Amino acid sequence: DASDIEKGTYPHYMLKEIDEQPLVMRKIIQAYQDINGDLTIDSDIIQAMNEADRIYIVACGTSYHAGLVGKQMIEKLAEVPVEVHVASEMGYNMPLLSNKPLFIFISQSGETADSRAVLVKVKELGYKAITITNVPGSTLSREADYTLLLHAGPEIAVASTKAYTAQIAVLAILASVTGNKGDLDLVHELGIVANAMEVLCDSKEEFEKMAYEYFTLTRNAFFIGRALDYYVCLEGALKLKEISYIQAEGFAGGELKHGTIALIEDGTPIIALATQENVNWSIRGNVKEVVARGANPCIISMKGFETDEDRFVVPEVHELLTPLVSVVPLQLLAYYAALHRDCDVDKPRNLAKSVTVE
Ligand code: AGP
Image (cartoon, rainbow, N blue to C red; front, side):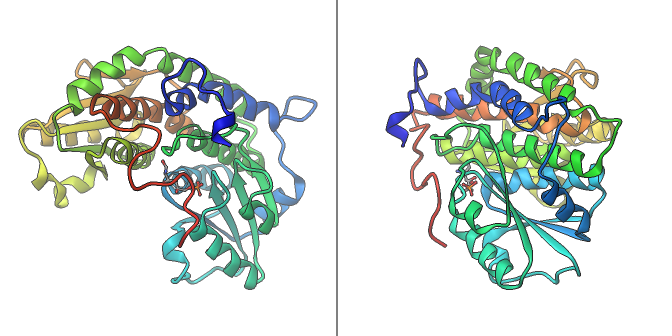
């Protein structure tokens, strides 16, 4: 119950929950470690993962965005093809399924009606499902065959923050344990992520300034990135629109010129993420294209790939785990943008924490 959970000295749950992310990373590592310190997942789940010829991730909103990152991790580490579906669409339009599908439902609350509607269908068809949720005993957890918990502690703010990073961390663990890749020391890498998140949480003043600079007067904003950065852009845009009411869109860098670039005007804020080595120069090329049309660029890059033009450089982490750190500046930018615009950060208009209607 929200009223039981203390905000402590925090003005808003959202800020508290953003700050909890390093701790949540460490809790997840602990929760999934065996007595030897190795990461472990219930052997039935690993067996289900290994037997599947295709994995279908089903979720809504922020959890869907975590699923997009999870797809990359599972395909790279476990080498099983993955499709990611928005639950509300899949509910009435089941894709052609593979011979041995396995379903993964991602839901912070475990109560989202759109996701549940798909789970009910999947069970009717006789297929296996894993639920990744923050709430033990929730509907989606009870009705699935297996549950993986987020260990993020209650998330009260309507805008999901720590659940998103927890979902990605748990998906990384699932992918790496399934793939059994000896070359990735995920305990170590997630520890580096936790430290990097701490550095970002200690940079609040800078993000407050940036939010003031980019979002005080604007009516719209664009987030661009390529590869994993693109998925984080979708999440950054959702955060900004749901709590600050600024119209925001996340785009794949290369897709801009196919239409959206028409919207760029003098001063339009463009937040660009540059944490991916193989697309570092192409995303910077996209920034140049919009700057030439008057956009106000804000490049957030990762150590190792930074240039002088960047507005903020996040600490370096493993290339598959960059969403865990690059999202933190976007969460904080959304938070301060909402604050500067006098919005109700924890309870934005028209939104509920868990959407229990279809
Ligand atoms: C996130 O900030 C949103 N409030 C929303 O998109 C949310 O992620 C979505 O409704 C899914 O909720 P769930 O994870 O509890 O299923």
